[in-house]
Length: 113
Image 1 (cartoon, helix red, strand yellow):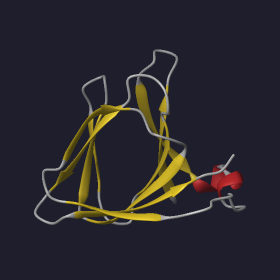
Image 2: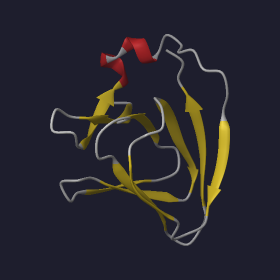
Image 3: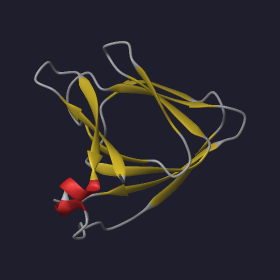
Image 4: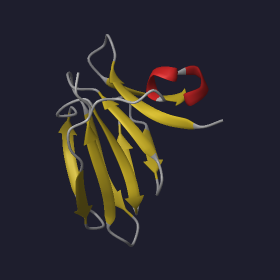
């Protein structure tokens, strides 16, 4: 099963996470319109406090590891090759921390439309 992780805002105004099986979401395999890609590097320990996603976007971890915190107290870890579909653009948001001994390098691809 090939999956990506979707972060979204629930009816409670909090961010939630679900895994999407790509075989059940053909819209993700048909090509989405994007106009740019941004590469970023975050040193180990870099922390971004509570924030919603700035826009609908994919964030792909190329190196290092991310720790995503949610309002319910759960913490999720994502390593190299992991794809997050960020759709929690309203509400309380989530926290993000680069963990481990190497910088976290990401590729961020905003989705148009």
